[in-house]
Amino acid sequence: MKDRNHLGNIGLIHQVNIIENGLIDIPMLQVLQPDGSVHSKADLPEITEHCALKILHTMQYIRLLDERMVAAQRQGRISFYLACTGEEASTIGSAAALEPQDMIMSQYREQGALAYRGFTTKEFMDQMFSNQNELNKGRQMPIHYGSKALNFMTISSPLGTQIPQASGYAYGQKMAGLDAVTICYFGEGAASEGDFHAGVNMAAVLDCPAIFFCRNNGYAISTPSEEQFAGDGIASRGIGYGVRTIRVDGNDVLAVYSATQAARKIALEHQCPVLIEAMTYRLAAHSTSDDPTGYRSKDEEERWRLKDPVLRFKTWIDAKGWLNKEQNLEFIEQTRQEILKELKLAEQVPICPIEQIIEDVYDTPPWHLKAQLAELKTHIKKYPEAYPKTSGRL
Image 1 (cartoon, helix red, strand yellow):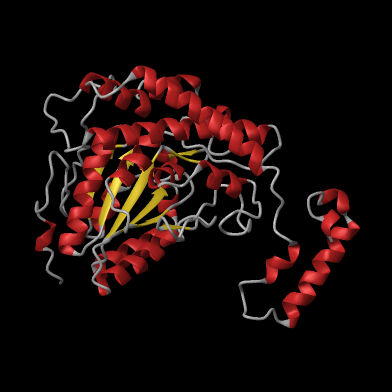
Image 2 (cartoon, helix red, strand yellow; image 1 turned 60 degrees about the vertical axis):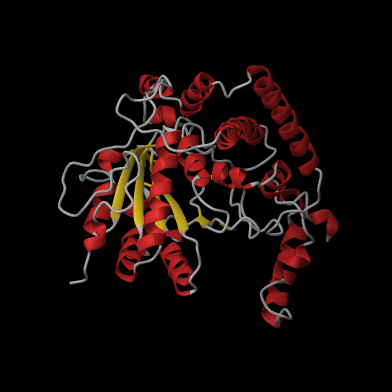
């Protein structure tokens, strides 16, 4: 049996609860109460005014982006969108605790982490409109972001695939002797995929410096967590695989920030994985293709609105004397105008020429890809009304 003595309390920061094998009770780290005040027994993490304001502004930015892009989808301007509303503290608070060299592997609702790293409004819009300025040449569906420059791995649609990939990437970081970890985001629904078990077990056995970050928002689309599993959330699974585990209030950005700082420190010092389960709630629909009124009540939603992560953190910053309310209102208005401006610009940019669809696979496109391209062109010419942005350029 491999020596697991490193599963003790080394690296314990503040009230981060590092769980060892055999424990049944899984406590939850909290720093801020829903009203924005500090819990009486909580230790505040070390955070600068600059960092705190950047986190708040990113949270506000993402909420405005979500609002505008859901409306854009309803107007038929984009085909699909996934909002982060209600989960901003989980994604942005964790990203703020990382270093730029750390790799982020996302599921699909982590646009806040990408924005915190510097992804611009123009880059968001180019991706969602799949135009020729998009970093991946418009070949991904909307919200499948990626940025090599920001160490943000391109999102793929199948649930859970990024989990074993994160283990492998973190193992590579370890073998290269890098001062870096890989963080992998996923929902509690994705933790029901086989890739979760394979990936977490791989990281545990090979001692990979990976942070597995589960956003437990209570629903796998329309399926509530109590119908997904009988165990105690996802944290208990980390314990079962011999992985150091932290459960945190996912609507408390300071708790998330503190937990992720601790996880990164432990992952690097001991070259081992850490699992974080952030207990949060998805206030928005699962996606623009979803209607949550069919599976949850308005009363339930309103109870969680009282725990709004943005308002909670803003209240704490204001109490610290770090918030200039006039400047903050100006920031919100400028951001709203910037989003609208870049949206209008991006939807006017053409998509890539259809010939490019067979590039970047082989040095020279082989005969069978050329044949498929010819068939595609024939199909588009036959049904031009179905491809208005493409057919006119064939």
